[in-house]
Length: 452
Image (cartoon, rainbow, N blue to C red; front, side, top):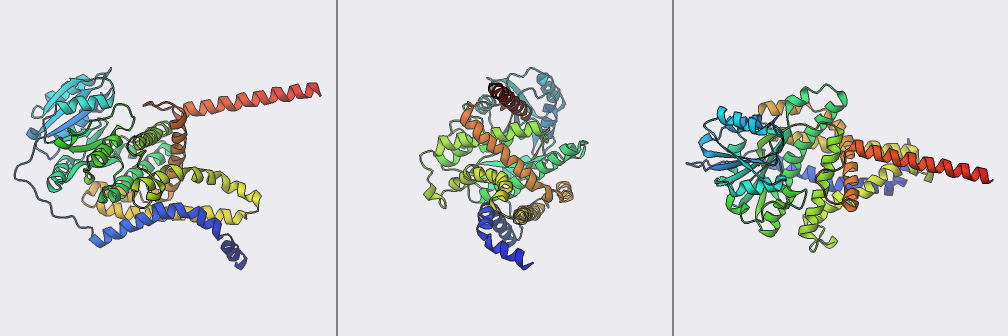
């Protein structure tokens, strides 16, 4: 036992190098946030309800949304916010399915809700911009049509704005639909969806909660975000030249206009869970590309490594981009290190210890999220039943990190486009390259043998 301990001390440099990044950028911030919540006593501040609620506009950008549009409008109608104070604009983005029929069905079923249809130019950003100019509400809410609102979501959004006059925009909490997760029969897809659910909960109720408190939110959710009308009209509206239009809008408001962009954690929007590895692969690469494009556009002249502790974006980019390279390389290097004299036992212990650190990080987030969800009984019970995900999440996060790594490379070598290549297409291309190289190798060997 003493030999093992002495060996661990001898390899302390290896341990520190391997553990420094997750400890500094993930575990310490998570622990600090948890202690802050403990200090606050998990109490919600007093909310002032205005005597007269304002008019709001809800924009639904539609592209072939016939399967989900009616349910989305129904959730708006069935919310606790007064229907006579809601304007719904369905911004059609060149749909080719029966989306208009579903709109007509909703218009007839919910006659007390003011719903209008408008055709727009192609592209989500174009649809949103056209609808914004036709909106009349004091607050403008953007919703993706593949989700449904929690019944108090709109009401809580408005109360947030009314009680926080300096906030120009807020993003709600986006979670995946519980019923779809529970109905998943395929084991692999079920694990993927449960991890995605936990990831969303962790991202919004832990990560973005921390960022929001410091006005360092990198991006509002494109699926569910809300704005003061005057603040939104003070921007250049949504950028049509990037796949990260939601991040671009966040930077316009905070960096260009100096406004506050926050999280309203108790406004919940439920979206459809991931359909499989292909969608995860395309989605995360698109998010990565959007992050890089927006950062390059807004902060290319102001980001300096010397501002690591003053500018939150330096740390964010270092973690999301710069550090992802050595992290990815270390995955392969761990096994190669055996040939450089490192003990397999030390390497195995390193992997186990790293895994346990990430499990600990997930556990802290689990406790924090459970408390923040305490006002939502069904959601809280469902989340607590997913306690086992804290043990699978480190692997899921590593998978997402590798996809982001690929996304960085593709951003460099492939022109901007909304739809990235799927995992199946990438796998097919890799297989073709490998077989092509193998075939060339065989032919060269054969030629060499003949000449010999």
